Length: 135
Image (cartoon, rainbow, N blue to C red; front, top):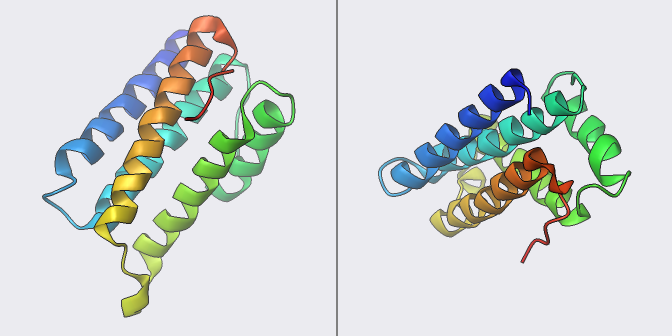
């Protein structure tokens, strides 16, 4: 794994740790934000290691799917989890209605999925090709 990919992966690990440590200290929306960015940065590390550069977040999701899921190197569930975390992060960041509030159990679920996603990315970066199963 090249130096830039390593740096992105370390950043992902720090974001995941932030989500885990702050899960009971800050709003669930903030936790979702950190968990999503852990996934985003882990996926960015995968792309950089694969020689790819991605556009901004919204277009980046499709590019990730094409590069890794459509080619069979990443299980579709990981892409689904990433997209769902992105959707929830958008609600947490921009939602203003009461029904836009993120429930603590939803934030916990996103953290769990982020943990699995970051593990998959680490395996991918170590050369297993990202073929981990998502339990």
